[in-house]
Each structure stands twice: as structure tokens, then as C-alpha cells.
Image (cartoon, rainbow, N blue to C red):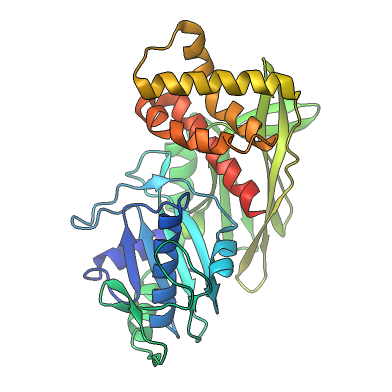
Length: 378
């Protein structure tokens, strides 16, 4: 079993970017340009490594190799993007890897690209890349290549050695459990469970009981063996259940208008542990968007647009508008889910202003975008 934190350290220590791994400060899958560049690198790494895994490490400054981290990214449908745009798509996995020196809301993203021994190409046009394009790694650069390329296996031995150095052991697991329960989350209710005598899942949060059911907020859930963060949110509530074979998370989102809010189930994630030392993660969107009165929504939508116009022009907000600003991302989200198609564009236009303000306003923006992304891919 590979400790993903050790794997990232070993990759970063292996000279520089090369034909089997790349590193990025961040990726942006909200725009076509960001998607296109991400697809190009996936395509190039897949073609350059027909027999071994290849990797993209996200949250690292390129020149200094400094680990700064990125926001937790839980888009389990990222494979859908790969399948939609690539011919002979590889299997990929995006994992959020915890690092002790990072703030609690930051992780290092690790994209694992599994080999398929076939030539991968763009299925259709995206941004400035043409459908049918083939990419290969030329050192640290993903370059377009001719159609008659020959796939060569040159990295298997190196990658295998790096992965072997990153294998987990009892010391890493015990240290991980102690650090999670008694250092990082000593102010929360923390628990752990061992599955199949091999896997250790730790979780922590603020617990509350509603009608006999226990829910968690400020939730952090981690697969300790691999140092992979399975779930993280400072806003949403989740329910947790488990048996000897599985660990199940149901995530709820808190949505509403005019001080009338409800919890809506968003996604169910089940991790199933096997006797052979492997596990599977299956996610299922169970979200049914709430419907609201259109007249009320028109009023809120127009009020949001007026606030956004003031932000663009640098006009100070009054007390009432400042209060409404805190709910602006969530109410734009509700409008979009109720067929106000321009609400998503308006929400994205508000990003730089909300990011500059920070605090609850920007956290609400990131949460709204996360929900939109999940709904879109389903």
C-alpha cells in the first residue's frame, strides 16, 4: 500500500518534471482553457508511459519546489471529463493528500494516470487544440506529435523504484492516527475504525444528534494508510455509517431563502474494503434541487445583480447589502438550480471580489461552485 504523501515527496525529490510526472501550482477546470491544458497533460503522460503509472502533483511552486497546497477538490466525476474528450482515455484518480505543514483547508492534489498501452488522443476540439491531436512528453513539456508515433516503455523501472520507496508501514500508520486524533483535531470529536486488519479511517467533527441520528459539521475524514483526505468541509453536514466491510458518507447541503433553510442530501460516497488489500470508492449524486417561488427568486436575483454592479464600480455597500453579500453565492446557486441560467455567469463574475473580501463570503463561493460542478457532471 502506497503512502501518497511519501510518494509526492519522492516525486518532488526526483530531479525535476520529466516524462512520467508533472507539477502544477494549481489547475482550473472551471474554464475551457484550464480544461484543455489539463487534458493535454493527461494525454501526453498517458502516451509517454504505456507500462507504468504517471503523476501530476498540484499545489507546488515550480521553480522553488515549495509545497503551498490547494483547496480540497472532491470532484469524483473528473473521469467523465477525461472520457468525454479523449480517445482511449486512461483511468485517472484525483486524491487530496494531507501535509502537516499546510493549513487545515489546504492539501496537495495528486493525479494518478494509469497506463492503458494505447495511443490516447483528443476526441474533439477544445480551446485551441484540435480534435485528433496526439501529445507526448518531451522532457518536462507536453508537445503535439505526429499520428505515426511509436510508444516506448522507458520509465517503468524508475517509477517502480519510486513507488516502492513510498510504501506504507506500521510506524507511518500509528503516527498518522495519533497526529489526526490528538494534534490536528484535539478540539473535535475524533474516531477511527480499522477495516480488514489493514485500512485505518479516521474522522473528526462537531457532532449533533437530530431525531436519533448523528451528524457531523466541520468534518475531516482521512484514509490514514495513504494519507489521503476523503472529505473536508467547514460548512456542510455529513452522516457517517460503517460495517466491517464499508464506510459510508452522506453529505448534506444547507440551502434556503429568507431565513428558512433545510438540509438537502447531496452525495453518497461508499468505500468498500476488500480482503485482498484493495478498496473501491463509489459515489452517487442524490441531490434533488429545491424549488422556490419564481417571483421571490426574481427579486433576490435582481438584488444580487445590484450588489455585483456596486462591487464592480467600487461603490460601498450599505448595511443591508453587506448582510446580503454573505448569502450572494448561495442565492445565485439557488437561482441557477431554478432555471436562471445566467446566475452561474454572475456567480463567476463575483469571484474576484469575494476572494478579495475572504472569510465566510469566499468560503460560500467555493462551496457553491463545488456543488455546481457535481451537478454538472451528473
